[in-house]
Length: 389
Ligand code: COA
Image (tube, rainbow, N blue to C red; front, side, top):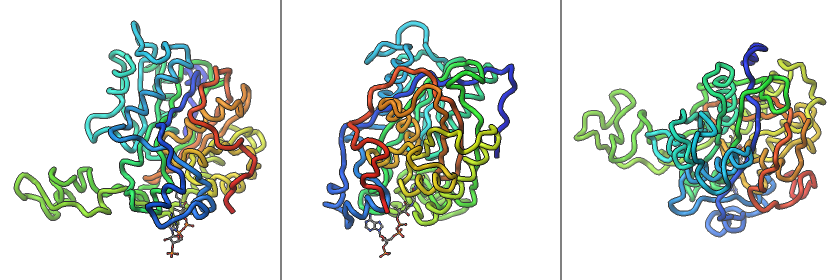
């Protein structure tokens, strides 16, 4: 569904900083192959992924989000490096978008805001799985256009290693942990950095394609009403609502990879086209396509479908895997750090994820202080090395 751009009088959300952070521990394909029936060649040719970063023991999503948020505030000139902000809060709203919150309740954003020293700001989570960052951008843009917020810190952060079964070779190879953050301020819709047009969509009839079946109100965690829920399902009315241990498959992230692959291609291409049409842009106007880093084959196929040369596709999935809601801001931070995107370049961001959900957004890159590189780069973009067949 194309989203109408706010009227001329309404302030636009303008990007004024980007940053990314990944946990230091690197897991290579060879390391995965030591415990799973897989190998480096299979993973590289099917996904383009060569390594991913994984949270350490006890490291939660908020820990990653705080690091990325701190770097973004510093890049925006709003906070000293490495310490909490002091005095008047430099942003009035913190949005964290994640599929792996620290806990089911409360949201992760208030704790992140508190740890960044952002006193009494509005803070809440947005959940749209891997589309979360684009939904979060649209939410921030709406708050700024409505005059509810003036400066927003938007963080996409995920620790999929906490929900993917380490013995599930189909999913364990794909996901990595990370966080990316942007700062948005109110500004003019025509100035560089202004975000919009947007296209957002969903199709909940396919919710089963990407799912963690248990742990919510439909199917609760063991020891907290497990087996209850689902109407008069098994376990309802048992003592203290305690039901049987959940099957392994229900506790972990599940994905029907083949079907997801097909949906990702069609939905991302359609969303990108809808956004370009709404803005009156031609494909050739796009200098950089920044898709959700699901799988290099998906990114290249969508670029091909749109008629965009693959060199214009910003891809860092080789180095970080699929980092969920963090993937687009991490790719932006990577590209900004390497000066791949330059002031005046026109960007198309397109995401796809569980729900199903999808979304796209356009922006012209502003003058920004380049962030530190979020991780040690593997190979320069566009060399074609290790391209999957
Ligand atoms: N190593 C080796 N073999 C593997 C494997 C692995 N890590 N994972 C699966 N296989 C096997 C399968 O068991 C299957 O074996 P079989 O033919 O004996 O049954 C074979 O490889 C082919 O499986 P298939 O699922 O058809 O492979 P694929 O080419 O579709 O690739 C994905 C699997 C997951 C890489 C691919 O479907 C994909 O990328 N899907 C999209 C996932 C995604 O991007 N999700 C995020 C969206 S936000």
